[in-house]
Each structure stands twice: as C-alpha cells, then as structure tokens.
Image (tube, rainbow, N blue to C red; front, top):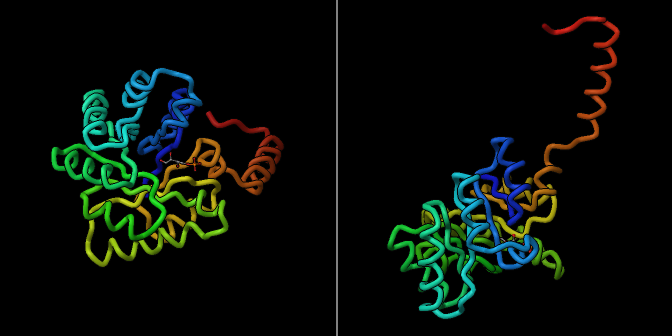
Length: 217
Ligand code: E4P
C-alpha cells in the first residue's frame, strides 16, 4: 500500500520524505489555508520534494472553470495530480484530463456508487473519506471494502486512495482490505512507528549492552 501524507506543510513533508516511506502528497483548500502560503508556490515546492503524485485541488465548480485551473496547476510539474470534486462537472473534467494523460484524484467520495462513476470517468485515484463517515456514526471502512470488490469485479485501474484517515486502525484496515493508497496527516503516520514495547525493548537492550562495557567499532 502506498503512503501519501495529507498536508501542505512543506517542513513536515520534507521530514517524512527522509524516511523513504512517502509515496505522494495530498492537499486540499483547507490544508492550504492552514499552511498560510501561496497555493501555486507551495505546490511547486512539494512537487520538488516528493517525486510521487502531489494532489492539488481545483476550486471552480463548473467544467470550464475547472479546466482553466487545472491547466495552471498541471503546468507546475509532471507529478501534479489534479484533484476534482465528485460532481458531474468534476467527472467531466476528470474524463478530459485523464484522456490528455494527466493524473486525476476524484475527491469527496462517500459512496461506492460514486466510486464506480469515478472509475468509469477514468480517475487515476478515488478518495473515499472514511473519517468524515465515522464522524456521523457510519463505518467509513465499509465503503472501502465495497469499492475494492466493485473495482476487482470489473478490473478498474482506478486506485483506491483512503482519505480522511484519523488513526492507525484506519491504516491497518485499509491494508487488510487491499486499498492501493492511504493518505494521513503527519501525526498519524508518525504514530505508525510507535509501540511502547519497542521503546521498552530498546531501553532494556541498551542497559544490558552498557553492562558489557563493549563498543561497536
Ligand atoms: C484527502 O485528500 C483530504 O485532503 C483529506 O483526507 C480530508 O481529511 P479530513 O476529513 O481530516 O479533513
């Protein structure tokens, strides 16, 4: 499963990229607002840090407006992926952009039927939002299982990009279901490395090693 980080904070992206485990980046207008920087500049910087797909979202709601914005965004770098909302205009835009060889991430997906439409529109990625579903008392991961089954039934090439990930259990479930990608905030990615028994084990080994009086090298 590929790991994308969901942030527009370039310091965080740089730091996580050093682990060698980062396959891409997703941003959205709220994350750009949080970063407090010029959108085009920040996308350019991110695309230079991470060679994998970097999602940049259009804000126009009509097809022509989306295409105009996508033209500007896709010129920034080859790895810029245009993010469009799951609407009729969004899917029209998706079809046109992927037909031109541009990667498209269809966002704000909340049902398996919407994911089916995105796959038929040739989306590179579909982003079902699991956390926002959980927030309203629905099991968001159930949609991921349904999408996996539908895409496998028809051999759709669209990659399932699990979004709105809130905790490590979402990551585990995504991997068990066979999602292609998950995108999570930096803090959730850092949580994946941690286990108290790992920390306690290191402490114990180092204490015993010190008693040997030895050094490596
Ligand atoms: C995905 O691409 C979105 O940017 C993101 O995952 C939304 O997450 P949120 O529900 O935590 O805002």
